[in-house]
Image 1 (cartoon, rainbow, N blue to C red):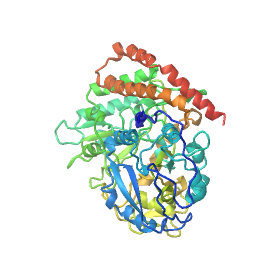
Image 2: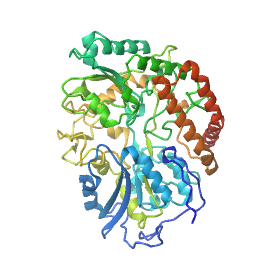
Image 3: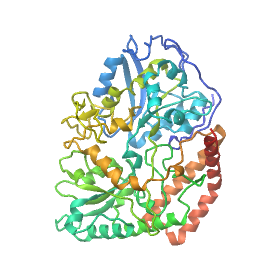
Image 4: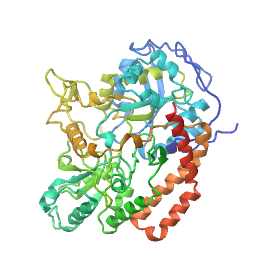
Length: 559
């Protein structure tokens, strides 16, 4: 038998076939890939346990650096007790998760469920049309009590996850996180500014002067030249060194790990799909970053380090060595509620005004695509869907993201006020979990957190994390937010478009990422190699790449 051709998951693209599975069984007896059926009674929507008999689901999950062991996790045990569903985990380490999923999809040896990978709409469409991913619309109709509530509470979610033809191949994580919606941020260590008599920088020129002072004036006072003025990372939420800073030169709508358009940086310009990285302004931004790097103001580790290494840099024992970091929040390079307290000593820097006055906060989509997929190998897709639907309930969402009811969190008391100034809904307790814990799944599964619910957390001075993020975002980033008519919506592509995009997107985005690093480090010269870089993009058929996106965008706008 000839094996199916497959393409990298990170692009959300692959070749499509024609077989499509449809319908759902009344009692979980839909046949799996082996042709065998597992006769298990699945109880009606909203009723627990999900199955009367113990049922096992094989789940391939993207590993989390914050979860110790999914198989022994407290939330896993709680779910099994409530649902009668046992999960047999196959954990793909975060660093190699893409490669792991590539291998699984390429081999055809599929699990019952794929969870936490953020599979893109295009990949959903392609593997769905092949029949590898089940259409979930009949399951939503029959069992989707919580899913339907989600569609009602957050308009636009159903449309965002529905493929052409009306099929839904994956369930999302919906997180109307106010601070996440404007996730490209810069955090700076306030005690160093105070010691040196400096203000929070407002322009790119001022940032340069601040970083130079951090490097040369011994702000930590230990008599050593050990200060790191600015750092980013290769893994984590909006930690890339070009994130945030490029928006002082041109809109850079990349969102590391958020939404569909991770790495492709596309936006809408007067109704036309456009991109920044072939523009003169992009070159100017790279020249600025190269200047910082050449003068030792950017840590070389910024292009390679993961979350753990970034946190070790920010939480250096005994004395602080890091002046500023690019990250979505102040718990990436430092530790929320950590013993050093440095997460409380960094403040956000508003978008910097660039040489031509550019000053933008890009917007991210709140719909995390492709978080839960049921494959054709599932012998009991009804039970698999009911488990996912249950995760959208309020209590399950809180247990999955925060921890145990009445241990790590409680419902609010009457009269308590939320972060948004309205009557509070819930609050954290004084119990603080370690960074690596085994109580929750740490935002791996499909969950529902509306803006009202998130901001309905009690504004507790003992747990100021969310209050800080809300206030910093409201004051420093919302005033500069990207215009909605320039935001590229999440899109599905036809099989023909997807096949053509596959090689184009990989080739182009890989080249852009490589050249960002080379131009910043100085391995490539902006004076000598910029024209060659642009020519390479032309030879990679950047024009056709944009034409395909434009066609998909035009089709979406006509709906």
